[in-house]
Length: 424
Image 1 (tube, one colour):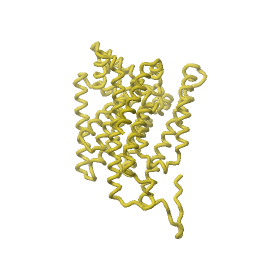
Image 2 (cartoon, rainbow, N blue to C red):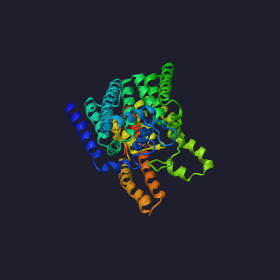
Image 3 (cartoon, rainbow, N blue to C red):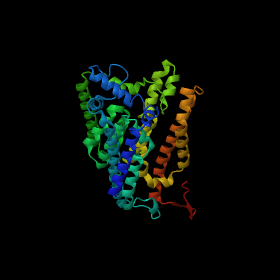
Image 4 (spheres, rainbow, N blue to C red):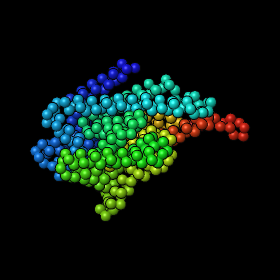
């Protein structure tokens, strides 16, 4: 199995490298579905140039990367630019590896819980088995390494590669139940892109063990690390301007460049005096609106809660890209035992296939041919978001159905007669 692991990583690295050095890399880098104002490599290059010449990169409204990543990439660009593609490839491979290790730990933990639980006798086919651990871990890794979305994000050298890497470390230490490193990487990613703050909820559930004192300890650790990172960024730049250019830029949504989300069209058409109300509403939808009910429902399964929240972040954030989607899609094999109860697989597949294929066409018709308008492109991105919502809700309901069947069996008795549960 280790040989297969090395082979997958090698093939994924070769695929990414040859695409980066190919003529297609420039086309991929310029796609609005892949590069956004928040993760664009061109903006990082501009920030590196400004910093090199003694100009505060956050004085304008162009650079939106945190100082640690910006200055690190600036050093690479100025001293060994030829190694830059290998840096992004290495981070992508490490992301997949940490997801692989995380999956093994999560599945082994679920097996331990299953041995203690008393399941209905007719549920063997939906119970997790020891033989499932290694194959499902490989499926998770392959789902990330060979997903066209993650490949495109790496080829475009977007900073979403860093986001996925930090989030993979968060999930790795979450599964390993190590509070400090888990909170560290969550704090790093929260300071970069704001929305991962909601992932504090599954961490609290994982580490608190129904103890209020432990829950407060987890929250305090997260806040302390956020404060330390803030002062670290301040010491690098010498002022607090980076706050408005990173978290402030994300929250206030100042750049209306089209993307695969729902923000850009609404705020392009919005009357200015309504902007604040809708801005707060949209940001609440992307962060806290689903947090409490989902946390209550999935309080006994923090990893499923984290998966659902991760997907909702990718769908509803202000500047989404396909790299965000690739990361949460890699978690689907982890929940393979729920697939039997998912009823919308074909619909979701059709949504993804049609919208992804049609997006570039409608963009060309709108921007270059002039024979379409913004409504066409927004319509297809709205369909893409709808497909993702179908996927997330289907997975959540499938998880609930599986838990019910494990406890009550897959058969019901009505008036003393056996009646099978209709799953699909």
